Length: 171
Image (cartoon, rainbow, N blue to C red; front, side, top):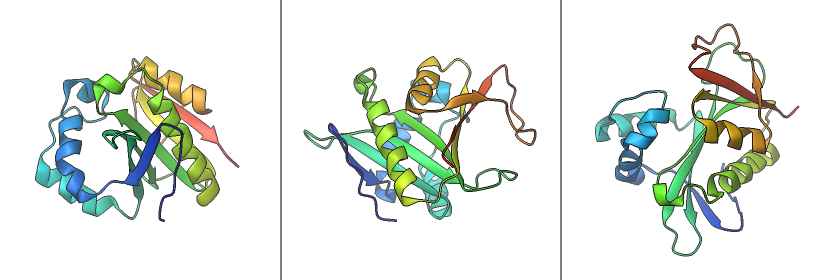
């Protein structure tokens, strides 16, 4: 699927393997490691292997400011990540990689634009997100775009004192 996502302050494009150094810089920052599912340092080869292995099941979208096209962060939607979900569902993940762009509403703008694009261009029954229970800004953003906190499905083994399951039903 070729992406054609627009919003007032941001440009969008698909992640490319050539973005590996940028993604590693972002993902290996202490700020993002604290919020991540995997709290480890990522290596270039590992990232590139992951990139090629996941292109059929996920879309990773880099967003950048329109003024100078500086990459700011990434939004990802992954299909069929967990066995057990019925219907067409995508797991949402996102981050602002450039910390000086945090708190400006850009993550909301990008998330809203990407989700609306997927609603129009993909068969989607629901979106879901799994986030750390202390990641209050992410929980607030997810609620703002239409997610609700829900109980974890039985087959997902997360500690509910550390993680929150959120869902946005489309159909």
